[in-house]
Length: 266
Image (cartoon, rainbow, N blue to C red):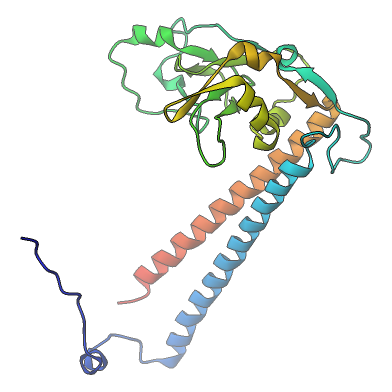
């Protein structure tokens, strides 16, 4: 038989008679109140700023890249005009087949989903690391997990440095020297651009999609000049830095408030 738990309740009479420790000095009460009012104002301001920055980024990802059926974006930096050039992915990337020769150890295993080096990785046999693919700075890898944001998987660019990834990830290396990694970080990961491409060059499996490499390399994408790539890449990099700083500021303010709640009351 199941146990029954009654909800804890307290009568109004008992509640008003419960003792509470508080400062008798009205001035101290007001000063404490002001501290928390200021903190709440800063938290609200920082939250609104973060929301605004994320909205700007979402709008920019849509307006600064050509949409389906278009050859130029709606928003461009001053001095740039003309249609973007259509290029096949085979002209932009080649499949990387470089395996790890144990040059890279467990400290250089990259999380493709989150783009950072994994820590505290235990590998019973270091020889297994020879099955890993080398992923250099600027390379892209296909991550096949389905999500609400990426319904057919996604490409992720290596922005942290050389390392290795599991053999389950297909890695591609950029061909052209006029390849701005900041630009391609956002272009190759942009669902507005890549969704239809990936629909045509992936196969569905349980909870994941698998990339058909030959089909992907035949697909095309519109590409701006190298100078325009640099402008767009720098813009989004700066925007992400602002988002990161604002996120850290908000978290710090919340920690300060929690500490004050803990230390300023008996």
